[in-house]
Length: 74
Image (cartoon, rainbow, N blue to C red; front, side, top):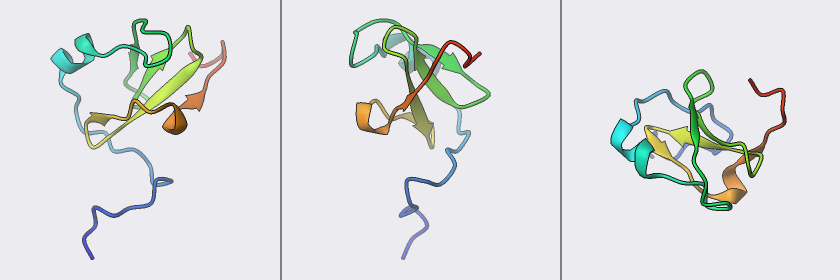
């Protein structure tokens, strides 16, 4: 089998994200803006309290894949 079938618990890769794509994306819950966390390779929605992972340079904008964040995420 190919290596592309990694389990979802594998660490997110740090492939670069297209800055133009980041400008277009909004939180699927609040439709508000997102903040890019380069250290964790995630897109943060402070209003929804969610962090969306970025895998292989592709933002995963599914609520089921997001993790809960709190005020101490910075």
